[in-house]
Length: 324
Image (cartoon, rainbow, N blue to C red; front, side, top):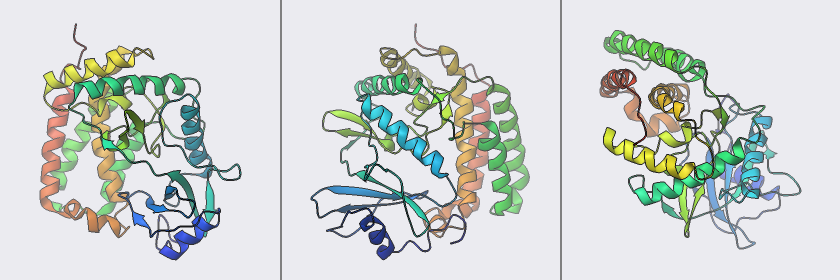
């Protein structure tokens, strides 16, 4: 099996893996929207619907995945709504034909509305509850959000991909280097906790009348603001109102360090660059050119040059402050 590859993960091998832990599919496999891992939904003979997730080879170690699972169990034990793995015979992580996989209950629900202040109020309390649990200990195996990984390593991945149009290389890397320099200067001496790590609307569901976190696959150490800032949208005034709503609700359950507000734009810059690096790193996976064909087009890189210029300007503006 080649590095990062899912080439040997056939429908038969998926069913064999699930059956190896005593679960027998009654329905066919429905592939869910996941590019980093391979995720399938099915109904089993026991009458329950499950989701099986096959972890991308060589991304996380067993210890790192089990730490993610332990965090989910810890949150569930504290009655923080989260989709935690299914435990079979005392285990939550399994292996079949060289692939690590986990089973989850299938949870349906309504999408979260990021522009709804009432929903942001509920979410702020939920993140506060999650962080109250998260602060109790630290990850030992999962990584920390860092400029080295999110900026420097991502740049190396972009350079190695040869996807950049030659005519745009100079303009792109000139502005990228300026963003990296400014972000690195601002993102330092950061106090970290265990995080969801990828807390955006796609990873939050209304299950009945309650909000629920899904997919802790990107959980890692980082600043608390990382799990809040991706909920901000619109112009500066809208973001200020959204931020005030989130933090006021958050502080009902967990103290918030207001000095972390200055990390919002550095974290936004890091996510932008890391995302490009991630696409470049995964380009050998056939699913990526098929689903992200625009990544190899001149227009995309022209847009990124503009986006990086705008982000550099945002980094040089005063940080957001809570409403008085």
